Image (tube, rainbow, N blue to C red):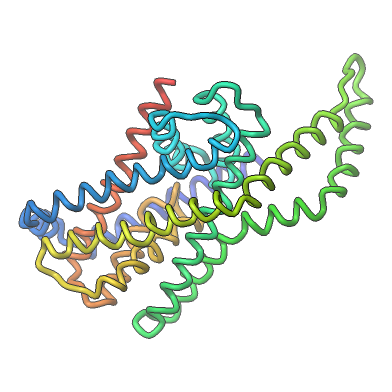
Length: 327
């Protein structure tokens, strides 16, 4: 198992290097720097405002869920909103983020139980993923005549992957009883070990029941679901589109702004497929290809995507890493 994990990491790193080489060979970085330098300051400031506001929306999304059970300040919500993307980058798999985030919530919010922290994380993952899938698949539908079939297929696949968390939640809820058989087996095996007296089934069953119960409370609250999805539609669609539009305007390039409400997020969705560590490189390469297919010059597309990813994702994740290390 350890060798297999090592091979996966090596393969991902190799693919990452290939992606970086493809980007380097297809983009003229002197031209990119030139394009960035000629951005009108007014539009660049608007872009930065949108990027900052986007991070603010991350904080609001956590606050909406957490306050169902505990009071939480905007400052703490902002720190959580910054740390979670960082965790998604450093942990070996996206699923691991679901395991690491409850620890952050427990650390940052007093009187938060393991079941509450896990339920908030699960609900956040489910609602975020559903919203992302919706925007991605609508983007594919909108741009079906402008992109090659192989890319559309890949984007549809990545969009459908975002529906997996909700599917797993429903399966876990519907087949809750099957877990008891598994826990009985674990209990029996542990009972064979001398001097160990612990009822794993009782502890695990209690945790699962409390977590599913609190997740249901959140997911069945129409106000919470509506507010959360509205926040992320604004974040993933409106703000992302405006960020890219302001950069394009600053470089005197033009594109239908309605397309931008779907195209960038659709392209970035490819990062959910574990091709490179954290999806780094592959998301940028896909987005550049999409924008070139939409008629944007290659150097401008590269400049816009690199700036957008740095200021809207990588820089906030880096700041989140600083908060994470301090805590």
